[in-house]
Image (cartoon, rainbow, N blue to C red; front, side, top):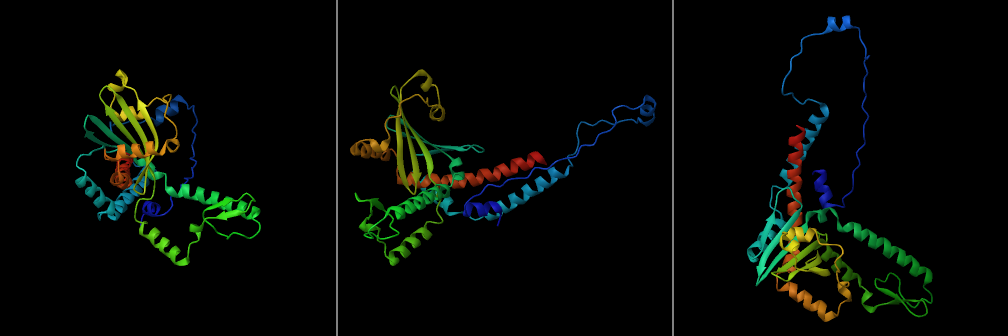
Length: 315
């Protein structure tokens, strides 16, 4: 199995490459004119030359080896490929705009008088969830240590998941946090079932445009089949906006525009209605599952293309 295959299945780590020093030889800068004339020989000039340095040859050979491994390991269709085809067949209204060699992917569709564009980026594949999980675990360990330092009276159990403080400074344990061993086994089985699924949150931007009314830009996160709204921004109609593509509008949104309050601070009914507004326009569970699957497949395809392009350059 190639190193990349291992990193796709396990936490990814960064590799550092050691630099090397090269020796430079020096020759006397001044020679006698008679010696130059005696040693001068005719020279033949050519418009082409063969690259034969060892570094280029070794790099090209290694890249070719990686290409062979990646091609072999991905010769069988993956679950992600099947899921993508299922989504496309069940959602024909979405047009996928995917350009080889680019990180951004667009989905486009019409809804009444609206033009809807969904944008996401394969760079999220290289921001794995385990980094956030490690940060969360470190924070939980710190909180547990603080809890043990302050707990008194023995009125509460240890190892609680969801804990709060009473007025007396003790730790209050929610009843639902008492997990029986049998239930823990079931939770482990559920985690095992999810191991084959893409496990990273993906940033998604949605642009809803209406003629003469500007556009709504909605920033979301797709994670485990659920969209979480981060912000909703109204982009006023302008000549500058009208002359730009949806991708350019999303990329060049002015930072000075008011983004509205944090979504979670809105009235709960407003939150619910905004979620319904997106749902009827196809921003739903099916799409939230599709985006990470597509990122996984495209990232692998782009990596293989990158290997071939770099190999062709250094050969």
